[in-house]
Image 1: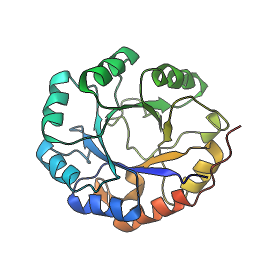
Image 2: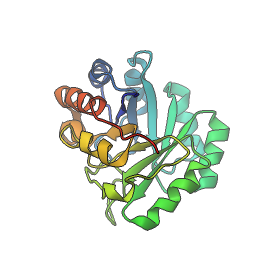
Image 3: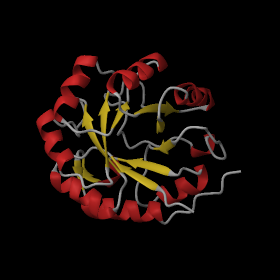
Length: 220
């Protein structure tokens, strides 16, 4: 059985990238969103991305980006995946994927059963889906709020596209989340920090170890 793959999001330094690499995570996320405490400038992101070893996929999180914004980022930052974390339509997701030639991960906020239909709709146009907790109304951040959703909503569900579980995960609950949802991939940001935007290498190592040690239920 394959190990759970882990994404650590919101890296802000080369030391963060080193911690991610040392822990054995598969993805490293960089946030390009000014309101986030994890926001990085293009110059900062370039330095962090260049510190990534082979085997760690560099993911750029953007929120409702224009083509000009994406062009500016990709001109300088060697990203492997674009993560669309705003209110982008399925048409916009397909457009970004076609125009920029990179795999696209689309984040979908889930709060109740009604939100699950979006996973299939966006899964038809995105390379991966990030199943996240829906942010509270009037929240400043579309993600990274440290909130979980009711994992029972997706327990036993199967989708045809690769997907990743996010929202309120930490070293203490990630194994339970995997066991309950069957997630083969997990994403964490605030759950491995000692302060907003400040990553903790020990927590990163503990999270990756707990995730990789989790038992993924067999697919039916």
